[in-house]
Length: 317
Image 1: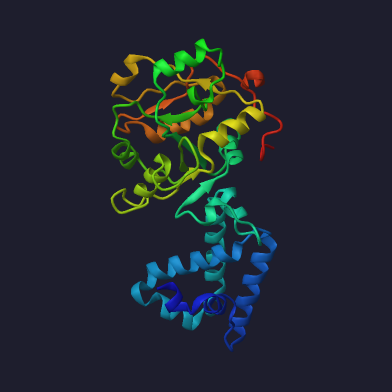
Image 2: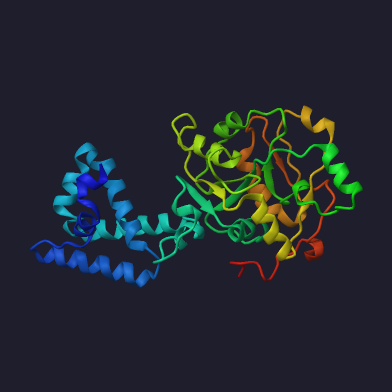
């Protein structure tokens, strides 16, 4: 519908940058160019187009594309141009860096072919370990299939102290084996400043747990939840990078009693108190989801940081 209504990329460019014959249209176009250039944000003009189309759709309904194409952004008042750019900036700031990277010329990755956003391992770790709060936070949802207690015990007996399959991030959302994951995720309260990132055992692909859950949430059955993504490479890539950066991972305790829990349990680590407080507020009363800080678990490898934000973590100021 978008391609038919605008005439592909050339129609989109004409809608944004085509000036009318009046002096006011030229002023509006110059204002748009000035605002976009001065912001120095990667791909901001694309976000301006998204904001212009979205607000036009709300205001004009089904005839939006035809009217927007006829008059263009330069046909609007200066105040409308400023409002549109401000809305685009808000969208830009709410977009993960992993997605913004794909807007750079020649850059490709798993996120360019999957039907939803993928978050790189370094950005996942940044949101888990960096205490600085931005306009939004990424909350990791660990949807790996649980390793049996017997397997974990066997790994420990074999001297595999740092078996990554039995480790987890110190702050994340996990489920016990008896829970209906789709139902719990669907019923989680929505908050604009909280983005969910699902992480599975391996790279997201059809049939893989994180991929299928994310696809479900993006459909009508999952109520088309915004701000949902998957971790690029899954736990394999995320845990490997965490080990390389000497970040602390927590061992998952395998206790029979865990399978009988039916209420939300919050365990707050002192080093992650700020993020846990925000996550607790968002997910309070969210069915039987288990929000864990793994504070009671034993620490695994990469614990040399002592809970302090690592200086070599990407994006950390």
